[in-house]
Image 1 (cartoon, helix red, strand yellow):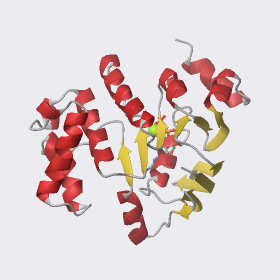
Image 2: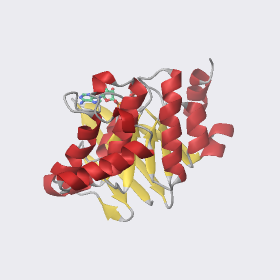
Image 3: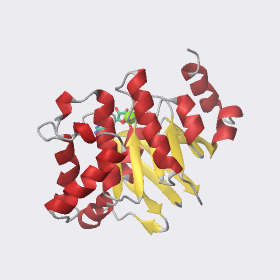
Image 4: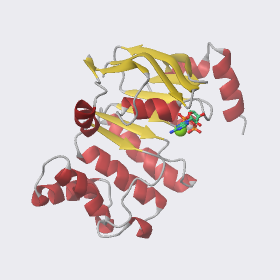
Length: 243
Ligand SMILES: Nc1ncnc2c1ncn2[C@@H]1O[C@H](COP(=O)(O)OP(=O)(O)OP(=O)(O)O)[C@@H](O)[C@H]1O
Ligand SMILES: [Mg+2]
């Protein structure tokens, strides 16, 4: 995809959270956002997803601007697949129903079509035998895999994942990261926020470091990890790679 962020500014209660964030990438498949807690990663991802309004500035995906007005935002939201760190699924619905609900209610599929698509994705991700379970009856890793299957089932033009593994133990994290890698290898376009630096390094083609509401560094993954140009990036790596 081609991605442009044009001077995105966002304040919460007068507090500047994104400070004219700009980024221009001609071609990127997997953009990984990293940076310290509170730096603005989730806020930026939510703006790109059309779930939050910027105070000023804009987003363009493949030369199409995201128009921050309710009606066009609805269309935009339908075209991206989002997964957040936890609580993605409706607790009262089964895994299968969690996938069929948006297909039926938002994407206009019949019940039969929606179930067919849901079964396809459940079996593809080895979740077939869990289709009738409710989220409380699934492991954390299975839950996130269902959430990812749901995000992918709508044929999104772009996947936006915000720390999808941060609530998981290492074994479940590996399950979910494997699934993300598979999707990446299929050529899906991703913007991913993660604290898993090893994974970021393996999967990203571009990395951006966001701290204090500003992009402190952006570049190809090898360059940012091996030869960080900014002090903020070196400081961040110094902290997260210590243990
Ligand atoms: N809805 C909101 N209302 C008020 N303040 C908010 C809101 N959402 C985020 N903030 C503030 O904006 C700043 C950036 O938050 P954000 O969640 O984007 O950071 P982050 O980089 O995702 O952090 P983390 O790595 O901890 O998830 C924080 O200071 C946060 O308290
Ligand atoms: Mg966050």
